[in-house]
Amino acid sequence: MAYNVLVDKEKCTGCGECADVCPVSVYELRNNKSVPVKAEDCIGCEACAEVCPAAAITIEEA
Image (cartoon, rainbow, N blue to C red; front, top):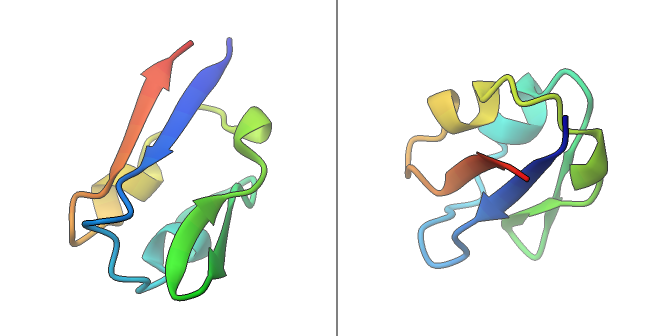
């Protein structure tokens, strides 16, 4: 199954929690914001969305 990984740049604080918790390394921090650089690898576990203190991440089924 494929997933759409959405990061709200307005909400993202660049804390890096999503990058730390993602088991398949979907995220990188660029210019102090989280960027889903390997969104195609997302397994839909939503660990990133759960740890995001700013509620900036949404995972949707594609």
